[in-house]
Amino acid sequence: MDQVEGWIAGHYGSRRGFASAYWHRALYLAGSYRNYQQIDWDLIERLVFVCKGNICRSAYAESVARSLGVDAVSCGIETRNGFPANETAIKTAAAKGIDLSQHRTTAIQSMAFKPTDLFIAMEPWQVERIAQEIGKDCKCSLLGLWGVPASPHIQDPYGASTTYFKNCFNYIEESVNEIARKIKAAGSY
Image 1 (cartoon, helix red, strand yellow):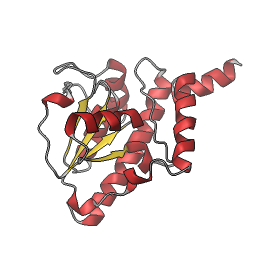
Image 2 (cartoon, one colour):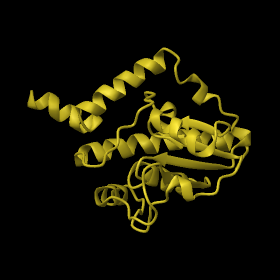
Image 3 (spheres, rainbow, N blue to C red):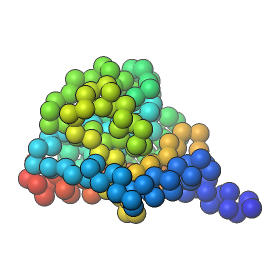
Image 4 (cartoon, helix red, strand yellow):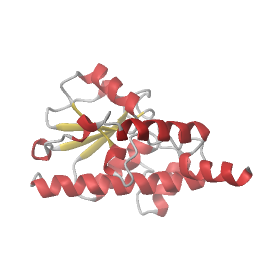
């Protein structure tokens, strides 16, 4: 049993993360998230990565996108401005050549957005909150829809094992790379 628990902790963060990942993957296979993949990449000028606290996932995704030459920002749905990135996130990102030491949280309510922004959330519930905060006309997607395998739910690594942080950040990086390829292929950059 310890081996199974360790595998779940390393790949999904927790039992809850495991259950959420498979639930949302089933919904994805049933077509529930298809509309979040219908992106006109020619119209996208900036990526806005969104997660709950803006201290791990969205901060890392923003930094990866910028390292690829893509205009990007990040924010949190349930955060306040000015907090640093999570310490484990900083260390995990540094091992991959990404510096999060200067990152400070930004609340979604305090940002100015443009019609050419693409909001990219980590979990489906966050897309609903983005629509509430910004309006239903904003363009939204889920980062995990661009990864392999597609995973509409990327579990928050906050408080999870170092192994999960590494796996989560690897998946985020692969997904951001795919989005960057699509943007560049469309000629936006």
